[in-house]
Image (cartoon, rainbow, N blue to C red):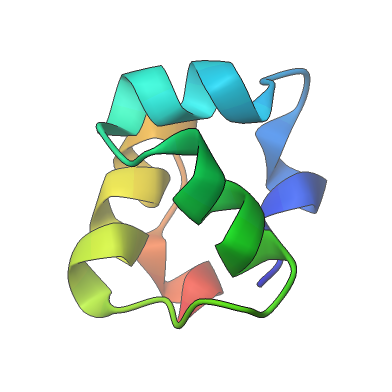
Length: 56
């Protein structure tokens, strides 16, 4: 998952707060240990103000 490239100063903790996704899950998705579904992609895209398509 390409989240670190798009976080632009957001920590995993802050991203977790903005999305409601546990920080542990954000870390696991970034490291390829957790699949990223459509709903998670939508939340991440909304929080980072980018298209969710970059994650799918």
